Image (cartoon, rainbow, N blue to C red; front, side, top):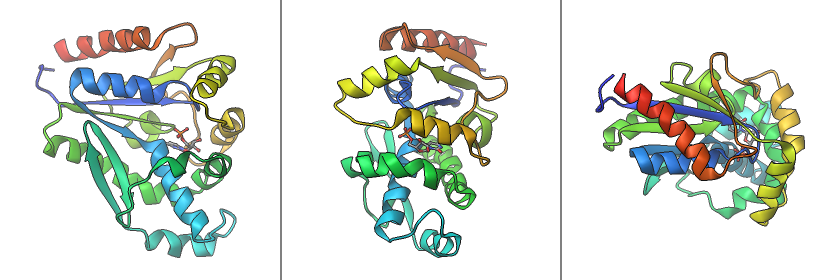
Length: 222
Ligand code: C5P
């Protein structure tokens, strides 16, 4: 692979494992477009909740999803989803969304609704002149980009993750979400086969980024 080759980096892991900070750091360092797919599930969850569509109601879900028009907005290196021209804001990080998002994300219909959209973002990154894409979520290395150049699974022990959220001043249902995300049938949270496990429990953000940068440099120079 040459220096100019477009690279795709998939980062999976549980809630508050450090995926976003790591992805943002890598996106700046390597001019990669950053995509946080958790925000897609949060934004669609909020829209469905506002429309009164419950995860248990399969028949209204299909029509509800069909009526949502997805778009993309780029802000610096980060690509955000837009839904009917709405740009998701802090409301997608509310307690109500934290409590409900994993129940909606377990629905195969919602996952397939977002599948092609997520894959299409590689072309957006190419068209916008980025040198690659770093996408974070729960099923990126297993389902969305199983052929990614680098597939990572970021782990951090539960106490460290709770500490991180507390520092951000956010009350989150980390363990509950992880439990639901790992046990669902559709695209469960798991270490993708062949992915590299990075344990960030005892590492600073800079140390995690350096560790991953070594892997990226080796891919780019091979
Ligand atoms: O990454 P974040 O914690 O914001 O994700 C919120 C929720 O979205 C997760 O708990 C999970 O239920 C869902 N999700 C998912 N698949 C992804 C990204 C997020 O199911 N690729």
